[in-house]
Image (cartoon, rainbow, N blue to C red):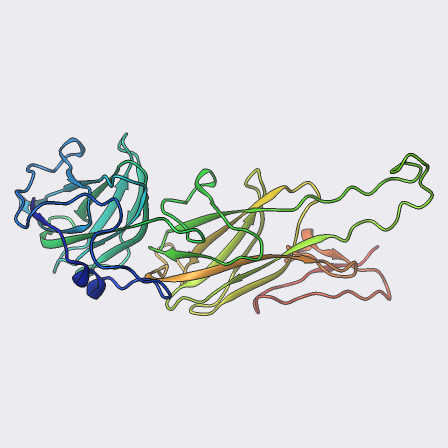
Length: 354
């Protein structure tokens, strides 16, 4: 059950939901916002099914209630419908004794995201839901038979380049990550996945001996181009153990690396194949402990920064992944190889001929 929808004054929003560092926001509603009406606008009941969702087309707060009848908790549906494409910050307050869950669905009712990582009595936050047209939000309690009063606050912002937008947990939704430029994202919940697409420069063709490049014969084809490699840097998030994966265009895993909880993660010398036109980089939260019920950290209130750079791999350098015998870097007798142990948990395997 949902109670009246009331718009928030700009001053209240700035107090409750601080802006990202380095940004400012003028007073008043965002450009293109639709007036939500005077305080005390009548609620639209019922809203316990997708077809009955309460429409929210401007930022503000809903005071609502998950009622419990015959041991079964209520379900509240909302549809976010800003007049222009927007990034929505959706925050639901905690309910004592209940475990709030926030689910995002498309028009067909298919789940696109589920935020439920804080636990009983705690609020849930989805800071960067991209809405182009309509998105449906369902508020429930993951704890059976629990409910109570809560508030749902929605804030709309114009999309910004260099930030990931949820949902982006599939290759088709991957966010562009230009080489050498930091992109920012959020580990919204423990099972969150952020996919990025990194375009790679074309590898120049090396002419074979005897080929003509200017109409005449080529006597010396020159030295083949050095192997290409990537360097990945991910900033630290308190309470999160970072995991980075690099995948091919066909989504085959080239490398997976995990860091330490609350520490940055740097991975060097990730080998690229000559035919790779682009790769995917996926950011996840790795398990904090062992076992099938292992916890995964999250930190939706703070953004991480991911930077992917191209680095030239020396001819005598090891290339990742080489952390298993079947991926070992060849090592010739009396030859010297250079490599990186990055991160600190990295393992480099080498194979001797014979």
